[in-house]
Length: 390
Image (cartoon, rainbow, N blue to C red; front, top):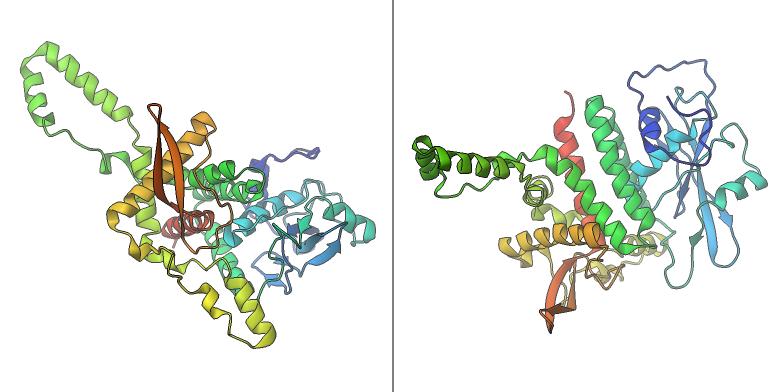
């Protein structure tokens, strides 16, 4: 049960149970309340789902180059108390962000759930998520029909999956999805934190999907030691300590790598859209001109997954987890120098590292933020599809 007064604070567990109650009870005569999503682009059409719908966004012009995009949501009938109905849209914002790879917010209170939007209430919502629409760092606020249709299709897919897995699996999934959501919300303020959150979203499921015993390395002398231990009591104590310590090693890094290779292998990475794909398709739909298609083609300087060996892919994934651990334990940012990459998959960066007092220049290949986001989305989605109750 959620708090009677949420007090402008979010406890995401309350949002999880509001989006999908363990026992769904729909009162047909109940009042249908409104909720709101705060997007960073113009949503031009209604998106209908089994229990709710998302309406086209309303643009609110703010001072300077800022605007806000408020998308009304027709809430499901089980959201029948205005004081906590906004918890549904907070969970929905997480799912929308997970699928779209964009920051999405929702109000932290339900004060406007019963109201018809007016200038004042629109302004109250708009100030909660201002979006820069022009100049350096501007959001890509115009979405093409092609991009919109793809987004709608993937939103339908993930919502159906979330309502089809067991309730325990649903809760686990939403916790991982929330990490992806927080990554997109925090990317502009702290790239390292966002990177860490994306990797962590997969780590949490990798521990469940890949058992440590399936990848544990067995020492070549282990069978010999076991036989010696049968006849030597002192050695037996040492051997049992070794086995116990080995069992404590959860091998999360290796399980993380195997999780990605199983649920989003490199041959699926080409499904990732080019960062300029939406802009190119928007111009084509607007003008009927396809002369900008070259922008999304592979350039001579770009690296694609098929250009890398299996060992290079493995090293990339290992480094992903290492950079995540360095942020966790030392607050050290990953070595990326470009938070918004213009390349489709990877950036090549020069890193200067101090090793034993000597400066060493390293040329490294880094998966860009967009690729990590895609891998997170695809691997988690594929894992959940496997868990759908038939």
